[in-house]
Image: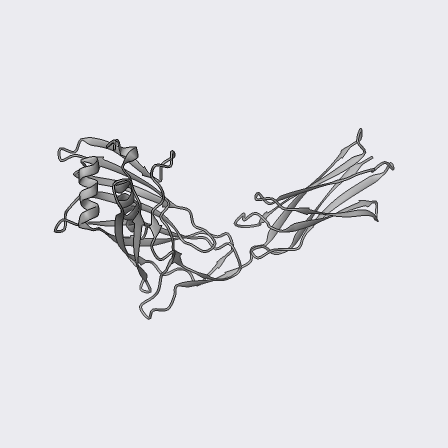
Length: 303
């Protein structure tokens, strides 16, 4: 097997774990810090890489609004066992490394933005211990109770060096060609908890929404097109579900159609056979969803 960095999955795994550690580190922790112990496994061509991580995260705010992001100071102690350390040393010939990890937060998993300091491989009786610092990212996407859970690691970037501090290249985990995959949480997800073993939670309320509406008339086809873009008024989450479009001529309702919002929160409909002269309007009504309150918008056109 080639020893080029992009083919060495072992280090990517170890680095991923190390990066994870950093995501949870912070110089000063709040009085109500949340903690968790996680274990990660990265399957590589050289063998499995195992990483254990102990997290300490600042206490989250008691309440948030859907779409809002909270960045919590974090410290993590990352441990690579002896076998994983040897794989890293022998596979890439690295003496020490540093790096970063970026994990996008989701509606049911926290994210990470971590910096891994320069760490010497085999610095603890053959194993490797790295103390990283950074932020845990919380971004609820629905109203209700959000529980802080750690999932898989995201994008890990590791920079290797030899004993003279000469660069030996960079490994990303996962990489673009698929030869190095993700580093997975062995438990699937791990809940952060306080000193009383109570899960770390946030009460989440809905954001107000904005429905930006446009109406366009295509005379040659006698078609009126209505488009609505729905998003959170303050934090910008795209709307989900359907929008009701109402075509009116003056105060008279001509027709009503429904359009489904796409991933960007945009829905469109076409009203056909619009031929009578006059002033028209299209009103788009969004009824709300799990994250956003209802809203509506209106635009006019002439035939």
